[in-house]
Image 1 (cartoon, one colour):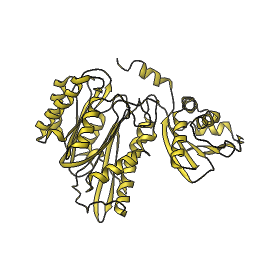
Image 2 (spheres, one colour):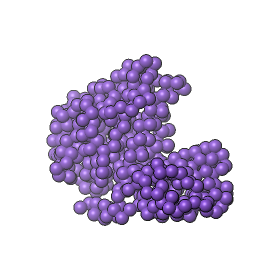
Image 3 (cartoon, one colour):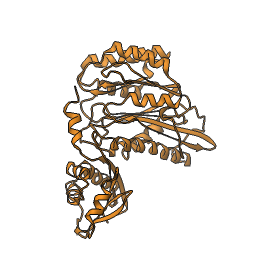
Image 4 (spheres, one colour):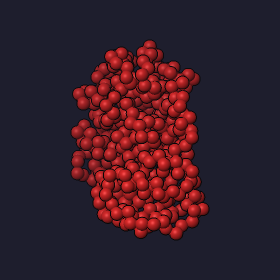
Length: 407
């Protein structure tokens, strides 16, 4: 597996574009399109929030009922959530317009939105934007970059990843883009993520792989504890690599699964590290747990702790907050058995062992915690299972950003 450029256009047969449509923002791209030259098998996962945006309802229907998908239209600025019948009608008109512009079936068009909840989307601007997107789409690295920038809201940078693998002598590519900075919490987040691949793989196997991998990637990040109304991950496979079909339980499947995981994890880490107002990516790795599920619960508890996140922002080795979060996670353990470490590019330090603080230097710990990527390692000393969760520090700017988000 090797990293390559191109995001959603890295795979054969995929094109993208990003344009300025004036949906809510001015003087910036705010609409994007992904298009496949051939029909794609689809897989997707969506928010578990009871309040679901209209595009989530639309896309779930397309993923589950349509024979294939071929295009995605995305807008930023307005979420099209809590918009009633008018909001769903907007999805339908978006799909109709894209189908007309691209000469594809309406039921093959997926729709995604992100932004402010409760506002109606100006459909005339969406339709005008679709015309420009259809005319501008290309299969270039630049087109992928423009699309990734167009779906941003409070994100500070675009998020893309792509890899290439060998399937019995055939090059297969997987690429993706995502947005997400706030309203991020396990069970997906205010995230829109789109992954494209030219692999030949069945819908059933792609769906199985995506749903399993989400549990260790997008469902292991948190910025602020809020689960969004719009969370969407869509994966499209058009088969244009012309590899032998990937089958479950084979070495080729393992290679594909690992590549998909790499793309998903890369995008998830980018979202966590770009949390609203964040200055550091905050990772917690739990090892030596009895079960994988317990490791997941424990690692999530630490990265979701507001007190621990604030300590990371202050570069304060306040390990008591970590123990506290582990203790209220719901997992039973012996606190006198575990070991805690801080780690970054500046080094690694043991901070807690045998039920008490280790003999460590506060100055060295502060230096480690001052790096842009900080890791907490928790060794439970109870088994062989592990899990990793990602978050960010909690800063003054998080409050500033969200105090006037609508305006």
